[in-house]
Structure formats: C-alpha cells, structure tokens
Amino acid sequence: MEDLQQALERYKEQGGRPSPSRGPGGARLKEVPPPIVYSRTKIVDCPEDLLHRRRIVTGFERGPFVEGYNLLRTQVLHRLRENNWNVLGVTSPNGQEGKTLTVANLAISLAMEATQTALLVDADLRKPGLHRLFGLRDVPGLADVLLDEMPVEDTLIHPGIGRFVLLPGGRAIPRSAELLTSPRMTALVHDLKHRYESRIILFDLPPVLTSADVLAFGPSLDAVLLVASEGLTRRAEVEEAIHRLKGAVPILGTVLNQVGRGDARAQQRKAPARAAIAHPMEN
Image (cartoon, rainbow, N blue to C red; front, top):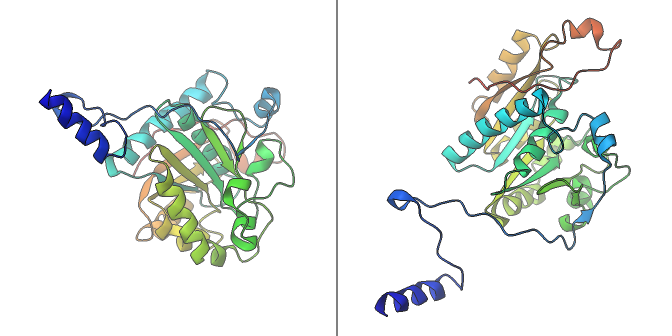
C-alpha cells in the first residue's frame, strides 16, 4: 500500500503524467508518441505517382535509394541523440547539388520512425522550392510568419506521409539573412525546438558559398549537414564550405549525393539527375 501511495504522489507531482519507462540500469526509454490528430495543420493529399516523379521515395517503397536514405537517417539519429540535439540544418557548397531533395527524403525517413515526428522548414527564402516537390503552388509559409505575423499553425502542411509536416518558405525574400536572424525568427525556432519532445526540425538552407544565410542562422541550429554532388562539387568547394561552417555551427557530417552520375557538369543539361544516394557521413 505504501508503494502505491508513493506512486500516486509521483503521479500528482508530474501533473497526471505517467512516469517515464526505465530500461536496464534505470536508463530512460524513449516513449512512442500518441497518434497525431491534426486540427489546424492543413492535410494535403499528395498523389504517390507525383511524389515518385519528384523523386520523393522514402515514404513509399524499398530499394537502393530508400536504403541509402535510411542509412543516413540512422547515422543522423545517432549523432543527434548523442548530443541531445533536435534542430538540423542542411546545406551544400553551391546550388544544384541535391540538398533540397536530400533533406526532403531524410525528413520523411525520420518521420517514418514510430518514436518521433519530423518538421521540415524551407529556410531557403531567396529561392523557396520545397513546396514544388510536393506539388503545391502559391502557399503561405515562413516568410508570411516572419513578415506578416501569420500564425505558424496556419502554414503547416501534412502531405499524408507518416508523422511528417512541412512548413513552406512562402514568397521569395531578397534580404533573407536579415530575416533569418530577426527576433521573430529566433523566437520561432525556440518554440519549434521545445514544443514537442519527440520532434526533429530540419531546415533546408541556401548554399553556404553563395549567401551569408547559413552562417547568420548558425547560432539557431544544433548542427548542420553538408550535401555534395559527385561530378559536380569540387573538393576545393567542399573544403571551403567546411572552413566557413567551422566555428559557426557544429558540422554533423557530409553526404555524397548523385553517386555514379559521371561528369555532371557536362550532363546536367542533357539528362535528368538521378535520385540521390546518401552515403555514410564523414567529419
């Protein structure tokens, strides 16, 4: 009876929430979040064939591309959990290196895990394009939240895939670095980071060598993932990108994308890019 009374007292102290489960040695086990009921988040039915054409594959099928992303997911999760991080930026040295496709497939792969949710934010505000991957047009997004004080809940989109939610970029903004470092953006990131314990937030960021956005936004991130493309990204460009990022934000690792494509500089206007293949990260 005394043990039961103590348990009830602990229950009251926790505000009516059950005690976290403990594993061997008293280690806390990660709880499975309850099913999500979307109230204000807009639910959009994205046809599977459209997503396949856009090379969004991680939510629907198995295969070498999917397994590559799942391998990347496992590595990312290990590093995030080791450091108790949940805010990850994804960038590349230059444009056309597959960072947006990579972060979209990675976010969906993360959202297929039962113990967490994933929120993908389009923070490439000069050229927002994540919404087009999901067949969306003229949707409000991050720019509207920051400039027009639109409630963020009114911009969120659930495309019917796992526990995945998208925050589009909205309209293009020329002076994006200033917006990403504004007090309103800082407050938004803090809210997104701490509102749900099981949430991982990923930001699709501009290329690090062509804008100041990533370095300016670095303090709001826990870490950054650098995407490079075989046959397109030069070694010197990767080294320069890493040099710029060091000291501004921890580098979680690198992803080699579009492996086997050959000389992309000669082919990029003659043939469509292959679906991305995520390879083990290297520091």
